[in-house]
Image (cartoon, rainbow, N blue to C red):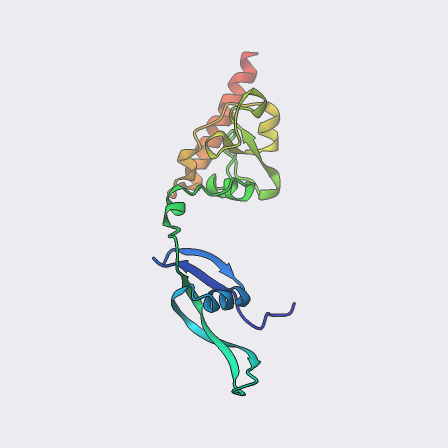
Amino acid sequence: MRRPSHPWILTLDANGVPHRWVSWQHAVFYHSKDLVAWVAGSHEFEIRGGINRVTGQQSFIRTNSIIAIKGRSHAHKLQTAVPPLNNRELFHRDRSICGYCGGEFSYQKLTRDHIVPVSQGGRDLWMNVVTCCGLSRSKSLPVHDVSEWSHARTTSRSVSRTRNRYQLALRVRKEAR
């Protein structure tokens, strides 16, 4: 894979809030339109243009690896931003632990399950989804409180206790039949 000749440039708003990564061409555009409020970053580079026929000098624009763009602040977007819901982030939130049986599984054996099914009016939101293994999904078990598992202090011992409680509950349920 060929490495680009110029790196991507981080754009910030004038307050220093990160906005997005842009190519060197976008950075040149911002400089040429006088939209750059200030520059930062340890890497400075120069983009050369054509040669002026009258003066014989070559045009150039210097930019840095970080540039702040004049205009509206993006800070208000960060306060209301909710990360997009996808399986990778969901499994990370739930620490790859099934919300039904409490077992820890690999990414390939997990799926997303809606607590209130979409067919019954449930929505595809963070608060309505849980990490689930295929076996538990097929059994339609009640959802455990996964908040205790997503806490940073979750230990393998607490997961084992939950798994043992689940297995005991299954045995009691089978014996009651």
